[in-house]
Image (cartoon, rainbow, N blue to C red; front, side, top):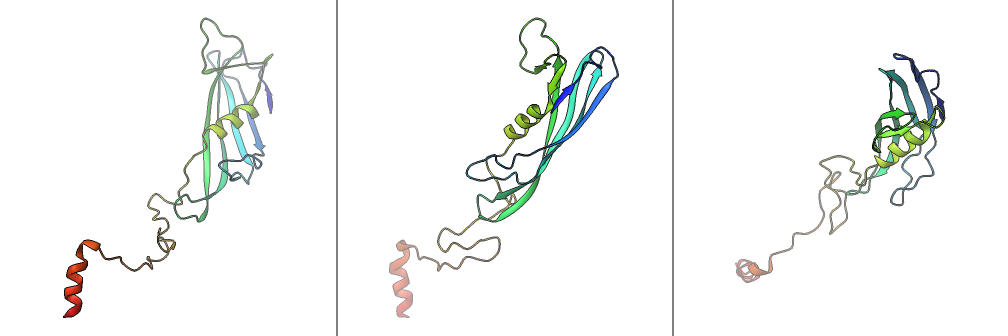
Length: 165
């Protein structure tokens, strides 16, 4: 979504609101497509003392598979959007300032990049997820392990003495 900012560039205190949705359902992350719902982007560009500031947020409900217990879960993701905008750069090149293109900015591209770069690489249904038992494979969050306790081979001789009695 391109946003025309020509009318507020030289008007301190002026602002332009924006609100739109991004469809990122085809974006793949580690073999999954977690962004099944549209990403809602809302915010505004404000002229604060002749400095254009874009502030807003992008949010959506994401569907994940827990990396420990393999259960499906959903979690809301909210990414803050904070950018300084300028028509030209004065002095050295600053990577934190986004340049306007003939008085316009592509807010959709900024929101897309910020949301994608903020995606997590590890997904847990909860911080205290116990995961799966490596022996029997049960979900330890839902039921106890079914594995028979393995005897320590160092104590095998003593166990034989106990079995005789």
